Image 1 (cartoon, rainbow over the protein chains, first blue to last red):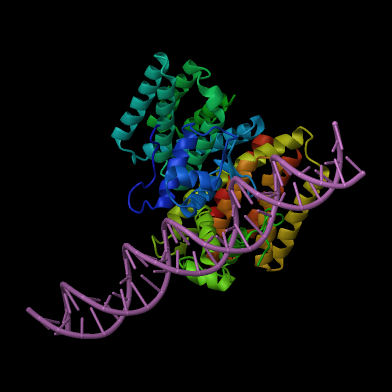
Image 2: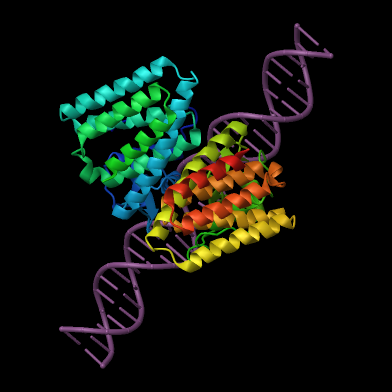
Length: 219
Length: 219
DNA sequence: CCCGCGGGGGCTGCATGCAATGCATACCGT
DNA sequence: ACGGTATGCATTGCATGCAGCCCCCGCGGG
C-alpha cells in the first residue's frame, strides 16, 4: 500500500481525517473495487468508530471523486468509463504541461536546488529498472513519484492538488488494465526527454513533452 | 446575488446540501468577506438547523477551497494572497485553453448546435453592453456565463468542475479589487476573438486566445 | 508595572438516539 | 400461478448530549 504523499499526516489527525486517509488508501490501493458499495454503518464497524466521522470521510471522498453517492443508500466506488477517463486524462495532460512548464521556468531562473533534479533523475532510473525487471507495481509507484515531484517543483499548489486527485481517480479506474504498462520504452524515453527539458530550462519543450506523454499513456 | 448555475438544485436537497449551497452563495456573493470566521454553532443558528448538517457543509466548502479550517476554531473564508491568486489564474488559464480547444474541435466536428453559439454571442454582447453602461456587477455575471458556457461546450465534465471551483475562489479573493474591470476593451475584444476561433473550429487558436485572455485578466 | 497562572466559557469532535425513507420480500386475493 | 399490497429491515439524515480543548480574562506575585 504505497504511502502516497500523505498531506499533513501530522497535527490534528482526528478520526474523520484518519477515516478519510484510510479509506483513500484502501480505494486507491484497490482493496475496494470500483463499483463496490460502502455503507457508513459497515465502515464504522470496520474502522471501529462511530458513524459520524465515517460519514464526513465519505463526503470528503466524494469531493475527491473517489466515490459517488448512491442517493441515500451509501456510496459506490467511482468507476470511470472510457469517455470519462479520456476526459480526465485530457485535464491531467493540460495540468502536467503547466507544471512541467513552470518547473522548467523555475529551473531557468535558478530557483531549483540541484538535489531536486537528482532525485528526479533517480526516480526515472528506478522506474526504468523496475519496469525492466517486471516489477510493475513498483514501477507505477516510482512513476507517480516522478510526476508528483515535477508538480511540486512547479511550486503551484492548486495545480498540484488537482493533479493528485486526478491521479487517484485514474489509478482506481485503470487498475484492472494497468498491470501491463502500455509502452514502457516510450514512457521511459519521454521521462528522459522531460527531465532534460526541465533541467535545461526549456519551458515550452517541457510543456509539450509532458502533454504528449500524458496523452500517449492515455489509451 | 447572481444565481450562479446552481448545479442540481432539484432532487435531494437535504439540509446539508442546502447549507452548502446557501453558504457558497453567501461567500461568493460577498456577504462573508475573506478572512471572516464562521463557527458551526453560529451558522447553525442563522440557518436554523442543527450543527451536524452545517458541519458537513463547512467541510464541503473547505474541499471547494472557499474556506480554510481554523484548526478547531471553526473555518475562515479563504483569502488568496497575490502569489496564490497568480497560481490559481495559471491553472485556470491552462484549463480554459483546454476547454476552448475542445469546444472548437467539437464545433469543427459538427457536434455543437448553432443555438449554443448564438447564446455565446449573446453573452458577449450583453457583457459589452453592461460594461459600456457601467453596470459592472452585471458585466461580471455575463462574463462568467460566457466562460462557463464554453466550458460546457467542451463536454469535459472534470475540467468544467474544476473551473467552476477556481472561478468561485477567484471571485472571492478579487471582489475587493474587481469592481473596475481592468481593460474592458481588451477583454471584450478577446471574447470576440475567442468566439470567432471556436465558431470557425480553429482549435489551436482558440486555446491560445483563451490562455492569453485569462493571463491578461490576471493582474 | 509586567509576567505567570488558574478558572470559566465557548467551541469543536464524537457518540448515540430517533424518525423517515426506500427496498425487498412474503403474503393474500383472485 | 400471478399481481398487488403490506410489512419488516436496512440505512440514512438529523438532533442532541457529553467530554475535551483552547483561548481569554482576571488575579496574584515579583
